[in-house]
Length: 399
Ligand SMILES: Cc1ncc(COP(=O)(O)O)c(C=O)c1O
Image 1: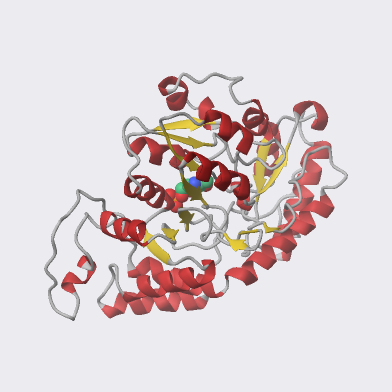
Image 2 (image 1 turned 90 degrees about the vertical axis):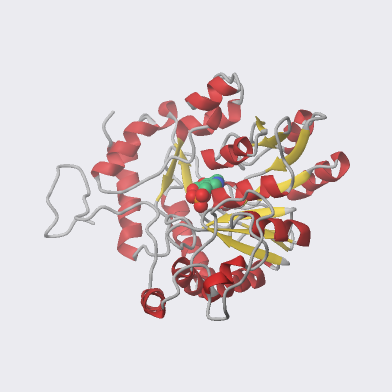
């Protein structure tokens, strides 16, 4: 938006205020709920966490939902609870955030990367099948950007090979795959409520499962491995004795975080609709530009619309992705890179002897991708500012 108060930079539309990438939307009810929790005297895990878990269980149709302090924690607990251990392999995608692979490593196992499909950016089931070895314990697909993976093919491999399916649905809270809600498909599904996510509790996560045995372990291992309901030990129902049955972790969510979550859940589908509308605006506005826009959702699926990613090819667009990102930043538009393929990062390169060339599709995306702001907190002006800045940077940006 170029307004009367906006300092003029020749040739550059410029906002006064930075449009932060992944702007969270916090309304008055959340603020009041947090205040009420602060005044209640009970800040830790308690009734609000349980309310949030119930809302999430209803929304996903999962039998069990366990609120945790991050999706990373959910992924780690999923691995440990399912018995993934040293010597095991877990097949996953390199086109993800480091937390996905780190959860496998923290369980003592090895993440085995296989390449993604260049169009959907999701793990390619045919490559998963080829990567299965006698050491494979689990498949860990990531519903990238909110696009559900080809779960029929993945579940089929898992059934035939006796593998567990743990889904990283950090981007995909609202996703639906062929009539099944994400969260009620694989053995365990892990969600994120980090600040930039579709709903937020500042930091937070959720694990869902239909399996009672895994639900019990996730609950217990997530709170030091203390026996059931130990979170109540200081409540007004009197001190509860507990027994430590496993050397667990400190991964529980607090009522302070859940105070945000319970109100965010009430608006989740309204916000999804708003992001879908922003997505449609971007698609229309960028149709004539020399960039690759996200592929439309697969039939009979609901895309959770978490990330709107453009692929900027140096030759086609005549600007590099990094210069394009800088141009947008100069116009005060925050962006993200999702993701630099994990096998190109120093740690995974060294630890698992990976090289450029190992996963050509992930590399293709990694070198070109940029995520534009996509949030229900964006105003119409914000959306227009992004459109103007993208068009201008691509058509007239520094070369
Ligand atoms: C694909 C993916 N998995 C896992 C995570 C980790 O989530 P959290 O920050 O809640 O631990 C993130 C992002 O933050 C992510 O993008």
